[in-house]
Amino acid sequence: MVRITVAGVVAVITLFLCSCATPPNGALSRAAAQTAYFREIYCLNTLIEITVYVDDSGQGGGQGGESALDAAEAVFMRVNGLMDRFDSGSDIYRVNNAPPGGEPVAVNEETYYLLQLAIEYCSQSGGAFDIGMGAVSDLWGLGSLYGIDAVQDYAPPASEQIMQAIAAGGYDKIALIDQSDGSLAVEIPSGMAIDLGGIAKGYAVQAAAEALMSEGVTSAVIDAGGNVHVIGSRDYESRAAGAGGARPWNVGIRSPRPTAAGDRQTGTQEQPPGAIELLAVVSVTDKSVVTSGDYHRYIERDGVRYHHILDPSTGMPATASISVTIVADESTLADYLSTAVFVLGPQKGLELVAQYPGAEALIVAPDMSVTTSPGFEGEIILTGGIQE
Image (tube, rainbow, N blue to C red; front, side, top):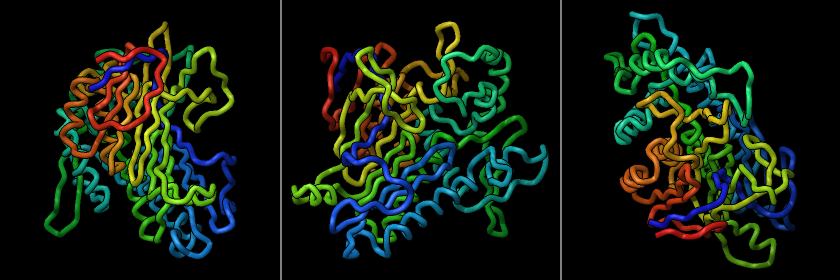
């Protein structure tokens, strides 16, 4: 375990592709022999960017870049339609808004599967990850806020309200029912709300990546805010540069709180423009790199930052970490772990990560120190000293 003291560092994912500007939706000629196909969609409360690299000869792109993008977009729209708890047509909305004492709510097989998996993760995390805390999140109202420094009329919920919502919620109160007629249903008690916000995007990214690969894609990037998944390697760029051979993708973990030396010229869809100050760069192939942080959706009042990642045990914004990055094969796992580890903090968080072979973590604590799991591979860019 390595601890690094860093001045003003919080992580958010930045993907380093090649030096050209982001293209509009559609095809962009990147080299004589290859084409990059790019698409933006807004889904799951996030701007999602998908880039597929296709050999003009037909290698690496199956039936073509546009059809691959169509397949990936369809996945995102399907998952959003099933699991967005604010969409009145979704399974999760119908479960959360079912009349008290009514019949269990029939749900799609895909929704049922993710609920099963999420409940397993809730248990494995000791409750640090809890999909049964939607009512608590609603009290805070921070789920759709981005980097708000001050809101004059905002007030945190009363402690009595929070305690009542915690008592009514909890993943262990969710009943998954495999009914005698073969249909699948879900039932929750009154006053509770399921929230898959800590895992649904990761699941969608993973399913979209699988859809791309089923189309024959061998090189692609999905960037869903703080959730990046790469397929294959940068062999496209390597050949275009005349380097030859395949190279991993470089995914940078950057600070969204630039120092005074930084400017504010670039940014991502969920982070105001700012200088790219790297804490680490990870070189990955066929991996997901997912970050959770206290800087995406928050409000600052009287010097206190209220953000959207809540500690299920207290109903308050978690304070053991300010940023967590997970590298794993599966985006669903990485998404869940980034939230659970954020709540647990460095020591307990690394203990949880160790339960999942192949998963690695980089954790930024409130004192700006950085802790990494033993197998975390990345070039750490320092502005302070190393502590063993």
